[in-house]
Length: 150
Picture 1: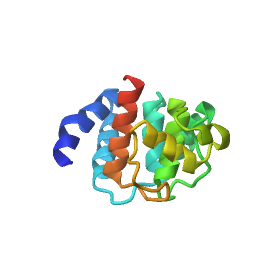
Picture 2: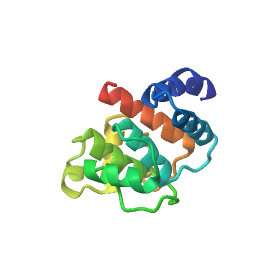
Picture 3: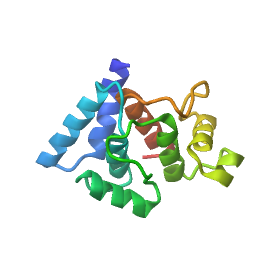
Picture 4: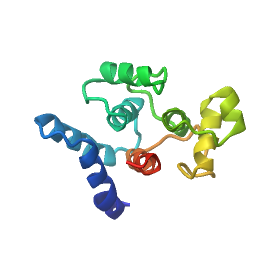
């Protein structure tokens, strides 16, 4: 996983956060610290999704407002532990996934997870209630970028 991280994920996020500024260094520090986290938070996901969707890195409130305008934000606190279901719902909204009939009806974390599993964005043998680690969140963002074609 570390080798994959160094060869694929870090260069991907360097491109995403490519503004030449001191803020860029803080983004790289954030990604590096996220790689060592055993449990990612909703705030971590908000920061990455905001960057992925073209938002300017700022603070949780501003990034949440930006994602809310895009229809991606969820109603959680910044320090809430990130579950696969939470990440799947944000992913499904961002990618506009249609892989699950039940997701199209209910738009819930449970069925968003199933839609992500159907699109090979998440493992099919896990639960939407499982917590994501930092490296798993980074890997998900890499898969999202690949799927989006960026």
